[in-house]
Picture 1 (cartoon, rainbow, N blue to C red):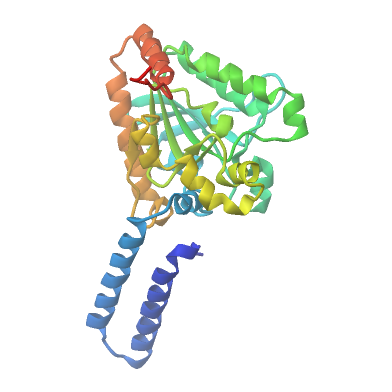
Picture 2: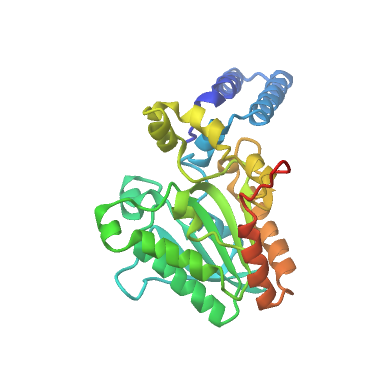
Length: 320
């Protein structure tokens, strides 16, 4: 079933009219190909116009779209021989993070990403892609395994944030995230991160200390959700659209701020409209960036990675 967002309703109405005309023509044995073709061209032009002028909060809605491809959907399309690995060797396995080894064409890679659910049962299992501490510890265990065997690492970010439950806090949520940040900074293999949907807070950053950070054009990456920000600043979570504008969380914003290194185009209408095309774009970007990083010495990778993050948020005041 197709899910339509509020701002897409003009396209929905036009496509419903097209479908009605097709059914009517089929029932009466009429042609109408010219009229239908013209309406389909109008629908496509309208869709392009809408998606060329999205607000930041509309991009948030697309990033959260229930039909958007998740980590496992991309893995299925870009990797061969993927073998999922489980457990943090301390407490439990966390289904909110999926991780394992696979082949990106002829290159072995360790892929780690947050995974949301498609229905209520799966979302309860995966907690809407919000990892527990054991999820982050599993991720780190496998990153260190990749480092030991000189296998490059790919991380796919798609989470509202780390799980805020009492049990997660008792088991050291903040410590698990902090350790990941510290340890990822000194891994001796190339790391490429792609924000494929939501990139929320430290829950996203905990697997995103990378040599290259990329985003799909309708994904978002921010220290807090727009609704959370609005609740703090204006005590009104319904002002999420206003907060999204202030946060500058969209891919073009983050490119201009040099927080991300590249923006991946999506099919017109969003990645959920064509999973295969979105995955092909992802695969091409990963291949290109891993090729570029493949010849860099481990010591230089660590130096460049540290420099990359140290310069974020640093501004000079010429009048000082």
